[in-house]
Amino acid sequence: MLIICFSTMHSNAENAAATWTGLKNLVSVQVVQNGGLVIFFDSEVNSVCTKASTKSVYIMSGYQSVTIDGVKSFLFTSLTALSTGIQVTVLYDDTTSHCWGKYLEIFK
Image (spheres, one colour):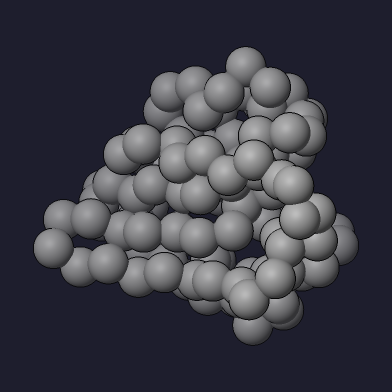
């Protein structure tokens, strides 16, 4: 099993609820104009995640203390998982409709 985690030391919202998506297959990765990305999965993440789709999480610098380098790492790892079919799970904040991602684990 290969595990890659992208982490932060502090959260923007100290009371943010952190939830794992569970193992999912990626179906697309969308790079957005603000330098972030949206990761789309094959099944629903959470009914709260409505900004792009209930099957997605957002990754952006400055949210959940993710840095610019962290966004790049999320992008690289997400594209690796997408191209190989390896499943991932993402720790995200389920208190907003963006469902901001914080950690990503990739599994084989």
